[in-house]
Length: 314
Image (cartoon, rainbow, N blue to C red; front, top):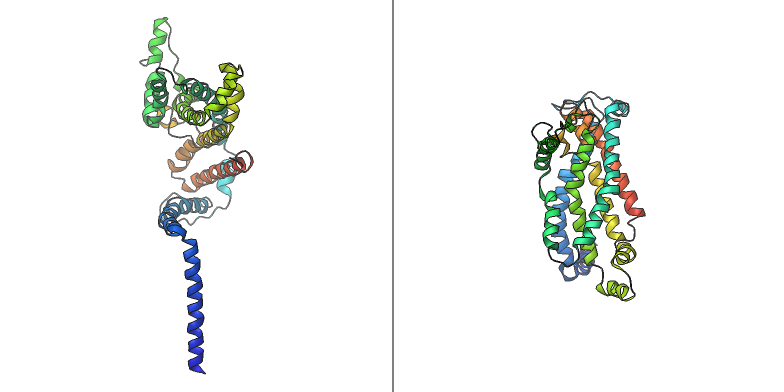
């Protein structure tokens, strides 16, 4: 009968609502679900709007020959990627990024570790030295690049003054194809080793004093404590620092612009500065998007591979 059908439907609907309400109460234990929703939804909206959508658009534009005006209409397929793979300057830029990764792992991180082991100790002046070593990281990349551009100036800079003390002419490092990127590497080590040093200091301070004291009571020297106790316990911190260092090296851009602008003769580009000058600077948005897609794939492949292998248990 119609009345009975309506009553049955209402009872069924009330039962579903009751189940949903019970599930929500269980999920919202202590207000956790509501709190997560309040903070997560705006974050997801911002991430989608400013990260996901631009990435998808870049992937779409990379299949077009487009100057950035109007709607892209000239579909070229994989031609932008073919040109990119055959471009000698892009190969050089990619090699420079790999060189930055190598210098970061071989020079920057060991230097940061050594300084962290020294200034992490409670001794007079340790906090002052931490601040001094960390200050370059606080300095904006553009400002740091301009400062070092003056230092490297072979006519009026600090390098010129040092050479003049010995009666010699200072080299113009930033104008040399052979030495320009080496000069950038020096600035990179100076700029970022303090940040990694602070990461290592945080890791050292998390080591139990009882472990260190036990090693000291067993007759271990300070060098042995550092090498056989502290550093092995810092492996999770070291892996995290390597992760940040490699990703940051692949995205190098800000220091190159004020120092060399990718010159001389395009000899000091990174992948991102190459994207900027040969893509956006020349209004070849499709080509620049292809460079961005390649860089995105490199970063994602490294991040997922590294986390699933070396940081799986951290």
